[in-house]
Length: 100
Image (cartoon, rainbow, N blue to C red):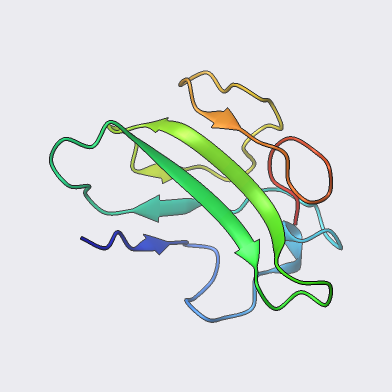
């Protein structure tokens, strides 16, 4: 089963607004996804750029997102463990959390 991830901040295949890039505010965009298969215990999300000049660039690693969560709000704080129990890993900017 595929899970479709969308954002209210930009269209699929479109340009990500500068606000969410390292040239802007460098905050995480809002993301949402549909229902998960029965028995899902948690979600993981890896946001990467396979077309980056130096090879695939990882912008965000977030995992252990509770199964009852279906969205990530804009500007998730750069904390290794979030209030809902989700955990964030290091991105290729060598920081915890999102890096645009």
